[in-house]
Length: 91
Image 1 (cartoon, rainbow, N blue to C red):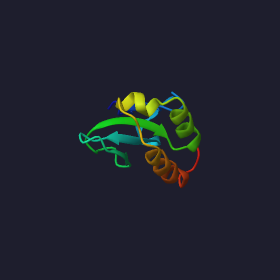
Image 2 (image 1 turned 90 degrees about the horizontal axis):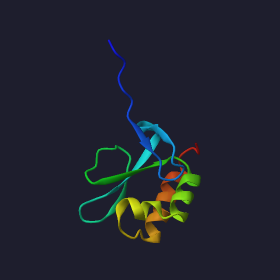
Image 3 (image 1 turned 90 degrees about the vertical axis):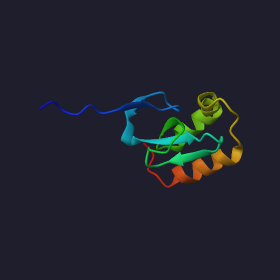
C-alpha cells in the first residue's frame, strides 16, 4: 500500500508550506464574516496561518489577509485572532 498524501498549505505570514494539520484556517463566509476555523471544514474562502503570533503580525503588517480575502479586515478581527492564537504554542 502507498502512504497517504499529506495535504500541504502555505502560511500567509511566513510563506512556508506546512502540513494542513499544523496550521490554523481563517475563513471568510459568503456573508463576508471572518472566523477562525479550527476544524478546517467551514464553508467559505480560506487562508492558513501558523499557530504563532509572529506569523499573524507579519500577515497583518503586509495586509496578506486583506489580499487573500479581497476585502478590508477590521482591527477587532486581528485582535480576536491574536487572543485565540495567544493560547497556542509558538511554532
